[in-house]
Image 1: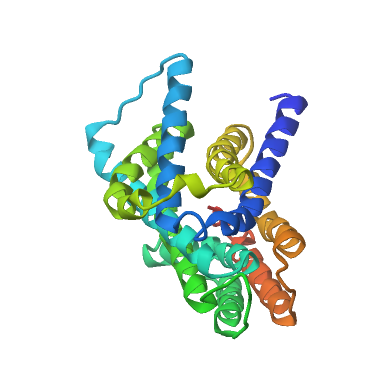
Image 2 (image 1 turned 90 degrees about the vertical axis):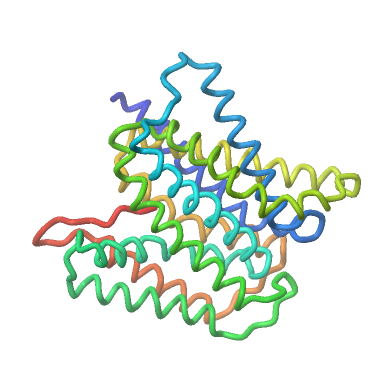
Length: 306
């Protein structure tokens, strides 16, 4: 692999996480104001799935099918990685603040570790127990601290939903790993979004049908386009490119920039206030995730980031 290709891969992953970080604030601009969370999810998933299929049609037409034996796992991946995951995330984000949501999303590697312990595929080590305690402490500090905010209608419920979203994604991460050995990442994403849309359609359709598209202003349409194209299609595409040319750990490390990007955008454009407890929670979560993901001196295990 050339240095130029490696550099492009790093820039692609950085761009993906920048888009994800900005998305925390952009969603607040349009939801639930002009489009309800479930309706937004339906638009996001169907357009992204369609674009991934168009990308396949424009390519060399490699096999697009799924082996029958893998179909149940694909269905579970679509349920956990798109349907439940996205519904909880967008709904939770509309209720809480971007900084809270971004910090709580960092708990994903911790929940991946908990599942690895549950399935006994990861040894329990003191360093990881300390990391787990720190991360959970930081999350509880965010959730239990009562704060009034003009951009959060129900912060505690929103925080809980975002945290449940991180847990659901952890299940998806463990389910999708075997598929990564048999299919290309873009092939998996295409089918996960397609099957996820089928799950979401009956749940999201009532809110989608009630959406009054004539009330959208040009900036709001721009925000919708950013959420669907920028923070979903292109962000996933950039991450896939990064995974193809970088290690999983190098790609996953960029997730730690999301809270920084989210905080800057939210403070500048939404007026979210900084607070000491948020800084303390951030330190606890970052320290916990670092210890959870740190290589063990004895075995060299590393919990992959989601």
